[in-house]
Image (cartoon, rainbow, N blue to C red; front, side):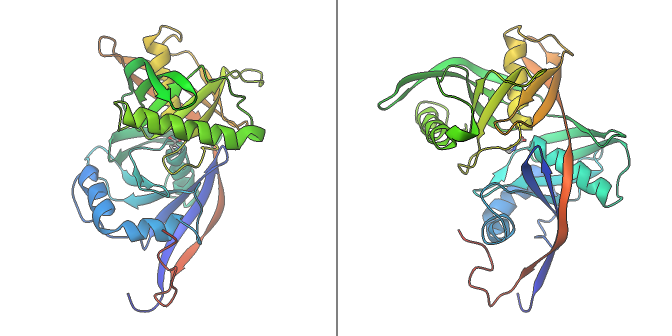
Length: 312
Ligand code: PYC
């Protein structure tokens, strides 16, 4: 690279969780299914990820979204999500941010679109009032009531479930899900993740704690630890999808009924599901939320800058 390189972006937040959509100037990952392109992104273009979302341009909480051409013929858009430590399979808050950003650019109007992602096609509907509903990938519970042992703390029991990313979902943890308790929540969930990974589930990279919500109309509050140790400010779209799969499997939420999930900062998503395959426990989740545009502009990559490619 000689001279300044420009990356055009739109920043939004969904329930407090940021999404940085790269609309121009990102790496060229070539053609092919998005699963292949994300592998190329991971292997050959990782410095682009760190330049875009890591400090000094970004922070641990920013989720990047690289807008790409879709591979699937039934999709109008393609996206690869990534964070401070690597690519993500899917991202619910990020898809809501993507749709709001495309609307901000005048590229879509209220209605439905299909979006290609590395873990499958998702649908999204932009409602006239600006809310976005995401028809997420098929979600299911892989294992129920898995007990893992935390050194010094004893056994913790949770479910392993897929909602576009892998989650360990814990109901009984004895912690207060409150912003004042962030350090303990982060430390605890980080230890849970390490134990879950070491004790049979290396694929799990998100840990979700549930508790009661003080908010009228909300069914639950959560705290979600993301792969790079930041907590999700939103209620987590893929985490809420994994939760819906568990609720469905346990017969605790009827098909089509609303589940209002509150985040630890008080933002909410509304989730619903429909059965895809009862025998396999597969559900089709729909997650509804709202994103707001915060900034648009260009990142400048200066080859003379020692931190041009971010702090890694
Ligand atoms: O909303 O799915 C989500 C998500 C994943 C990581 C951060 N947010």
